[in-house]
Structures are given as C-alpha cells and as structure tokens.
Image 1 (tube, rainbow, N blue to C red):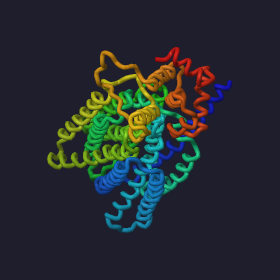
Image 2 (cartoon, one colour):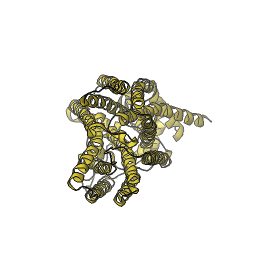
Image 3 (cartoon, rainbow, N blue to C red):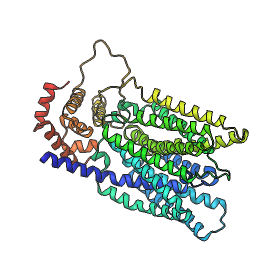
Image 4 (spheres, rainbow, N blue to C red):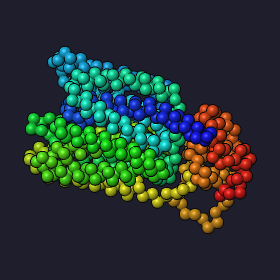
Length: 521
C-alpha cells in the first residue's frame, strides 16, 4: 500500500512538472505560427515571402552565439531574455492587432517589423521551455513536444478561420499568458528531477555521442533536407491568385493529420518506454513526405491533398526538432540555447530557402512541376538516408553507461591525484572505439562501483536518476555532497535514496556495498 501511494505521488509530481512546459511550449509555437511564416499552414499568407521568419532566425542566431561565447548563460540572463521575449512578442502582436482594427495604411516595413518582433519573442519563449525540459525522460519529452505541436496546430487552425484581428489579439494573450506558465514552473520540481532521463533512450546510443560534432551535424543536416523538401512543396500549392494559403479542405487535412500523428507518437512513446523513437519518427516523416510528393506529381485535385500532407510533415518535424534540441541540450557540451537556436535555424531557415528555390525553379520552367518534384524526392531521400546511416548506426553502442555525476566525480578525483587539487572544469572523454589491450589493467574502484550499480539498477528497475544517486552514495558521498554533484535539493536526494531502499529491500549503505561486492561486476 505504501509503495502504491509512493507511485501515485510520483505520478502527481511528474504531471505537475510537465504541465507548465506543455502549456508554455504550445502557446509559444502557436504564437509564432499565427504571426510569422508557419501561419500559412492554417490558410494564412506569410508576409514578404518569409522575411519575418528569417529575422527570427537571425534573433535565434544572436542568442545562440552569445550562449556559445559565454559557454553557459547565467540564470539571470535567462530570466532577462524570457522577460523581454514575453513583452516583445506581446507588443508586436498588439501592434499588428492595432493595424487590423484601424485598417491603417501602414508601410510594409512596419508590418514586417511587428511580425518579426512577435515571432522572435515567441521563438525565444520556445527556447526557454526546451531548456526547462533538459535531462527529462525521453518518453515524456516526446509526450510534451508532440502534445504541444498538436495543441498549437488546433489553435492555429481555428484562430486562422476567425480572421487576422482575432488571431493577433489571441497571440497577444498567449504571449502574456507565459507569465502564468513560467510562474507555475517555478513552483514545481524541474521535469528532469521528477522524470530523470537515461541518455541511451533518446537515440539508443551511448552518452558520449551527444558531444560528437559529426553526430550533431548529421542530425541537423537531416532536418535541413526535410525542411527544404517541405518548403519546395509549399510552392506547388499556390493558388491562382498567388496566395500561399491552403484551401479549407486542405487545411482540415493538415490539422487532422498533424494532430492525429502527434498524439499517436506521444502515445507510442509512453507505451514503448525502453525504445528510442528516432527510427519510428523518421519512417513516418519519410512516408508522409513521399506520399505528399507523389500526390503533388499527380496534380489536379491531388495537389492540395499532397500539399496538406507535406505541411503536416513540417509540423511533425517541428516537434521532432524540439525533441532533438532537448536531447542534445541534456547531454551535449554546449548551452541549451545553442542547440535550440541551431535546430530552429535548420528547420525554418531551410524551409524559407526551399520556398525561394521552388519559386526560382518555377519561374525558370513555368508550368513544369517535374524539377521541383524531383528535387523534393531527392531531399527527402537524402535526409532519411543520412539519419538512418549516421544517427541510428552507432558502432560504439554500448550498455556500459556511466552516469554524468560519476563523470564529474572521476574527473575531480583524477585531477586531485595528478595536480594535488580538484579541477571540475571539464568532462572526461570516454573512449569507445580504441582497441582493447590484451592485458587490461584492473578497473578503478569508482568504475567498478559505477558498472556494478548499473547492473543493480537493471535488476531492480531503478530509474536513471536513482542510478546516478546510488552511484555517488555508494562511493561514500554524503547526501549533501550528492545534492551538490547532481544539482538536486537534499530533500529530493533523500527521497531517491528512500525509494532505492524500498526497491532493493536493502536498508543501509553498508548493505548496498555488500550487495555490490557479492553480485556486482
């Protein structure tokens, strides 16, 4: 009965931690879609052929470059960026609503500036929520990002029907509602504490791959290729009047397809807790984009259906990009804003590039769809092939995962042995491809305990965070030291240790050490 009560409290804690992130990310994505380039997916026409989207990419680049230069953005800077972003997004939307209400004959650059301001603020708010999700269990990250995209898609669809004034007022309300969601997030535990992650479950690969530049480049290149194909598809759905908006029927197909696929992926993530979703998601993206390409090639009445499927792919890709940003932010070497900015630019920048390229090809060969269709197919094939060959085939894949807290401890211990004083400024690299010598030295006590705890965690079903806590606890750290190493409160550490005792039926540190000595390895 006590265990059931504990599980129920954990579930309640997890829901409380995830709810603000889900709501905040959904509002940020909806705000961006309603005012900037993605609005055309709900029947809205982007102004200046995606120029406002490119401005948001420049804003993302500036924040990402600052985070890269500073190594890690301080909390005060993050608070300031978020505070400014809320006001910029809201004021930009309010300015657009004023132009709609007064029907003022404003200069085009004024409208562009307001769109870009609102979109940039919304993008930075999305970055904030992706940062909040770092080190959260991969299945629950999938639940949040795909759930947020599904909710944002429905909001954009219905508000798009209501007209520009209503959607700009809604964007204003969504932006300032972020004060409530950020306040709620500060009152609950961080999602990564309530639902700690294991790095293997993000991509099914070893933790050191998250700092591999080639691995990151492959992920971004795959996103760029699929976004490029989506941008090209948008040019084939232009109406006679030249509007980038979809017909009502195609908008319904887009909303239903993207929403249903997002919910199915989120449900699948919860059902398959021990498997990476990357392969499943990319298979779905490739099949949907391929089907959309075929329908666009058929022309006639199939054009808008094919365009709707390709638009749905872009929405699902948006959710997957959020997932990738959280994965790399959780275990990569850079600040979370660096990964979020890079993912944003790869998706939206290349989508605009694809639209521009499609327009140029259409101008060079009027009425001939074949060149654009061929390029779409090539981009889709190249993106999916790259992901499967580079991201999913990891020759260094291994079950010998050492928790991040142990990496920090081992580095401090090694530096103390070499230089006489601790140095925790870097994380040691783990060699996974080097040949194993014939007579390998005996593992250090720290490595032996770490690997033994991993095996123990698998036997007793310990979570990733519990494995990290148990490793440091078995190494002799006090609860206060464990709290410091893992950046958790002492109450949270105490709760994790109590759950470990309950799951393993052990009752002291010495009993844990005796178990590791007898059954570890």
